[in-house]
Image 1: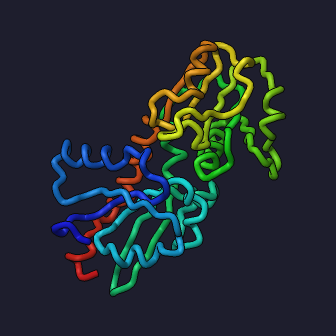
Image 2 (image 1 turned 135 degrees about the vertical axis):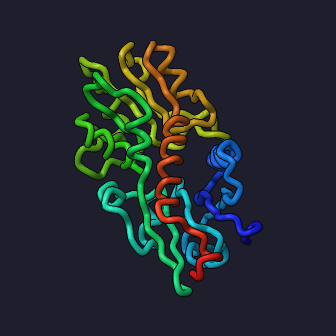
Length: 260
């Protein structure tokens, strides 16, 4: 429902209990004195309901997309941005409505948010745990920055990916980056962590967890014990959120007030 003619944004995916996106945007609106916008969480388990969901929420002009839909959402969109197409995943949707018709375009702000979130100078190789939509965005960003990437998966099926068993034996002479792009360790399952050989970690290596709730996962704790550099995904969340907001507002959207 349209809350007092406020422009609506939100997050779709499942589960959403871990997400801080709604707090981030509402604090942003309050801090910047933006009174005509609202951001909500929309837990969704079945993407076949996506179009009816949009029809039921005519106030929506933009959405973020999280697990498990960053790849699957593409087939439900009218168009996707070139970068999102190259990545193969969407985390931001812009919604247009005109003459009674509805149009959607997908973008990916995860890649830019990730690469801007930390200093990756000196990294010789990156290993990305997981092969979902977030993993694809991270891999794209790192490769575009000239850092070789290997994907680590429970069931490797593509060139350039290896199994967790193979990863156990990987040793490199120069600092490596290991990115957890899986949900392991995310609230409320905080006792879980990727099963890699943490004994091979050395000072100079960099463990980056896309999970940001909790702030320090077991994955990061194990890295810290070995003296590695560690970082969670909170800064990436903020950066990709701001990039999403720019996309949503590139051409001001107010579907109920402009004859759309």
